[in-house]
Image 1 (cartoon, rainbow, N blue to C red):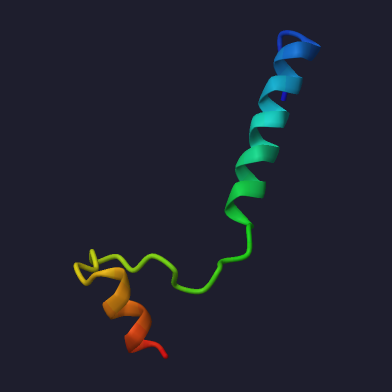
Image 2 (image 1 turned 180 degrees about the vertical axis):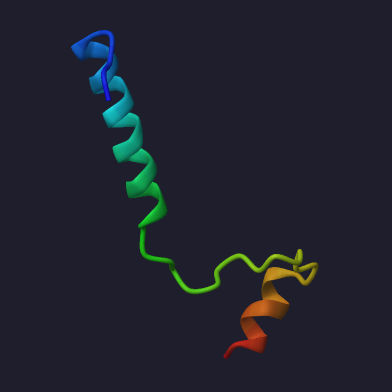
Length: 49
């Protein structure tokens, strides 16, 4: 691939790098379920104790 300038090439490569880093972050379990949890914080913490 040919880029107009070294700066353009650097911008594209750096964008790609940040994107892949963001994708490969280790997941912290299922912290945020897809469905909204309407329970209060107290209810949730007592349920998991």
